[in-house]
Every structure is written in structure tokens, then in C-alpha cells.
Amino acid sequence: MTPKRPRGAGAFPKAVETPAPVMPDPASLYAALDLGTNSCRMLIAQPKGSQFHVIDSFSKSVQLGYGLESSGRLGRGSMNRTIAALRICKQKLQRHKVGHMRLVATEACRRAKNGKQFINQIRRETGLRLEIISPEEEARLAVISCAPLVSTKTEQLLVVDIGGGSTELVWIDLTNVPHRERPGAIM
Image (cartoon, rainbow, N blue to C red; front, side):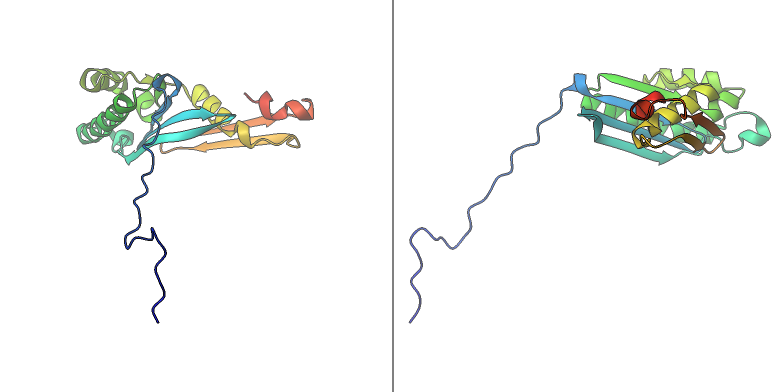
């Protein structure tokens, strides 16, 4: 004998609709873009408590520094690849209506004879305003990015930022800083 199907048990399951994702408030979004010697990277994130939740990201090998060592200049092909990547970044920034951003260029633009002209070209062609930062500022930003990893037991810290065109080393001595304050002290 065939079992009797319970009342209301249809042959097809009911569709379950997932709610549309809630779009973050653009005023609460932050973007960081790093144009290095080899790559262009960008993160768009929203603060969530003491951390950030990544909303979007971009990473592309642009080889901006290709040929720089021999010529002292950024090459046309490298600049074209970089501008193409930055156009994608611009689209992402516009799509998310990012409220706060820091867009930096490092060693290749620092060292190149035509680095400042390239930054101006980027502004004209994409509308993005990148700043060429000093090695000291690059090192400072590397240290800040490590701050959440510092334990209250940390006494000394060596931060090594290895990039495509430069390497920054920062030695931090926290032995005279009270244990509770060590994670925040390097900020």
C-alpha cells in the first residue's frame, strides 16, 4: 500500500528568496590604493568594530618599473598598463561612491625622472589624484598596517616591507611601554 501524502506537501519545493544585500553607506567606506613598482592594488572597506570588512578589491601586475633601472624613466607601455588598471579602480570607486580614500604611488614614481608628469597624466586621464609618498611615509604605513598583530607581550618588533622597487625596515622597541598600551603604541 502506498503511503498517503500529507496535506500541503507539494511536489515542488517553495522558492526561498534571499534578501538583497544591504548596500553600505558610501560615507562609511574607505579606499586605499597602492601603486607600486610592479603592481596596482586597491581595497575598499567598511569599518566593523575594531576591524574592516572588505567590500571590493583590485590587484593587477602593471610592471610600472619595467626598464626604469636602465633608462631612469617610466616606459610608455608600463604607463599605459597602469592607466588601464587605474581606470578599473576609478570605476569601482565610483560604483561604491567611496567617501574617504588615500591613493599613493611609491618607488617607481619617486625614482623616475618623469614620475611627477605621470601622476599628472593619471589625474588628467582618470581623475584620480595619487600622491607620491616618501620612503619614510611608506614605512610608517607598513607599521600601522601591522598594529593589529602586536601582542601585549611584544617587546621588540621588526617590520619589513618588501616591495618591487624598495624595501623598508622599521625596528620598534616597546620595552618601556606598559603592556596594555603596546598594541596601540605603534600607531
